[in-house]
Length: 102
Image 1 (tube, rainbow, N blue to C red):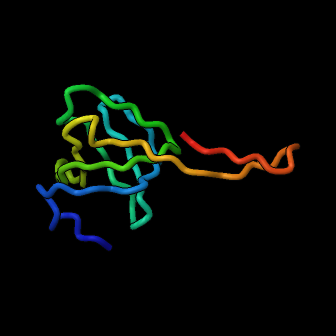
Image 2 (image 1 turned 120 degrees about the horizontal axis):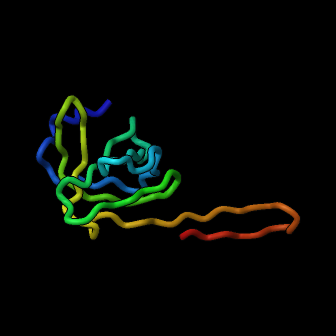
């Protein structure tokens, strides 16, 4: 288990983080990069709100913050949230259909 408190105030990056909880009314959403539990991403430092949808994948750079008994990641701008793609193979009626997202 990662001790998130040791990274408080540090600029960190989540890579290939999958959104597990969509953006709520306060600009907070949750993502998991596969290294442990979900982390909440909050748009408090951004000049515009950001809407994340469950299942989307992002690379996120932000400042680690602890507030109200929660570990948060605070991107400083939308430029620090980059959607990443993934590939999958879907097999319905077609023998093989390759789909690449986004």
